[in-house]
Image (cartoon, rainbow, N blue to C red):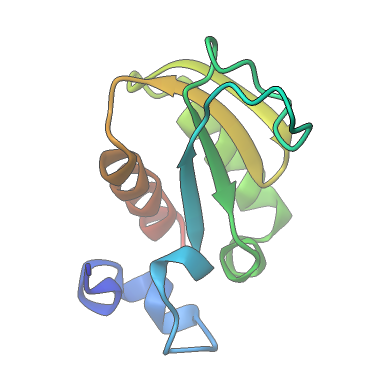
Amino acid sequence: MMNLEVKYPKLFDKLEDKEVELRHLLNVDENYEDYDSEEYEFDFEEYNFVIYIAEPVQKILGEEKMSALADTLGDHSAFENFVISEEDLYGVKSALSEEEIVTLVLEHIEEMV
């Protein structure tokens, strides 16, 4: 388990709940073909990961910085495809692993806090 407090001190400092776990901040899930579910509207061939920015991070960043985060990530070379479904939900195509995407996104958030 990554030590969030050490790796992302500015973000951690702004969190109300210091017992927070990574999944409370950010979720990166592999996007796969699922005929039974309408949950994800991302084509699994175009977007192999779904990124969700959780509420505590949304509150800390605010609307303007959430928009800037999406722009920054959208322009990042790690993502072949990038689409914003909602302000806190993105579909991406990347050769990076789940963990690498988490680190990349959290590093961007830490810079913006």
